[in-house]
Image (cartoon, rainbow, N blue to C red; front, side):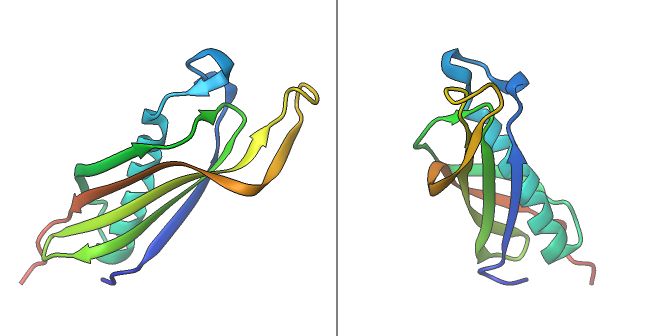
Length: 128
């Protein structure tokens, strides 16, 4: 149970998830990934999957597109008796480049912060 514990997942965004023109993916996609990485945080700290209780802040800063590789990180910033406050980031680390060819892509020299958030998870009380 450590403030500062971080967990990172990477995920390729398939073209089947494009929802808008320009192969844009809706912001909820990142929120689903935040739930996944928060689950691993709870498993590591408490041996339980936990329950996502709320977001206190969500900011959509840049577009996510089909063909992106996203890096999602969760970092514990506060530990309560049963609650944990977690800061989340979703960063685009690779991007499809269909302008260069049907399956072309590149690693971004400067990753793009797409979404940031702060949320709270709760875990069961410890048995006495």
